[in-house]
Length: 196
Image (tube, rainbow, N blue to C red; front, side, top):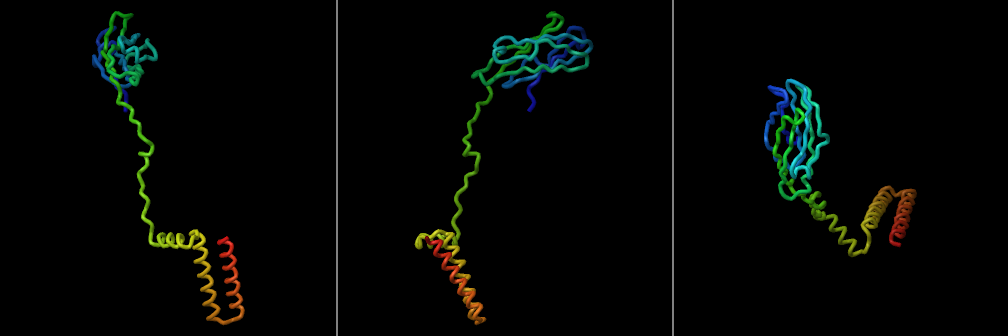
């Protein structure tokens, strides 16, 4: 969002003439003064008056305005330090003070800062309901006192022994029977190491 702006026409129609586009401004933030040059160049002096000078400041006070050019004057306002409106004037002078205008400026307090708890930035997530398999594993681990990883190794070992036993029974070879024995011994060793 661009800051509020007030325009003053310099030397429009005659030398050392100042014509504001508005004679008042209300803001809660910094604003801009646009000095719009017309027929001849001019030296322009700007100053703040009244209570406005307590909360606002100009980077510079003297400006040279070229014909057919716009000189922008930023006015920094600190509205955070006020609790109620502050009135003052922005004075614009030219011709060594022979011509001057005054723009009434009212600075109102900005909207209060809202403190947002960081927990509100994250959406609330409820724990999902456990699946049937998770509930069954939880019941078995509670009854047997084993960890889910141990139960997974136990199930994998039983499947391996079952496949080896079916293979040995269907083929009937001594080599396959020796393979069954190796699978059973490996399963027993793994089970022993997990339970310890």
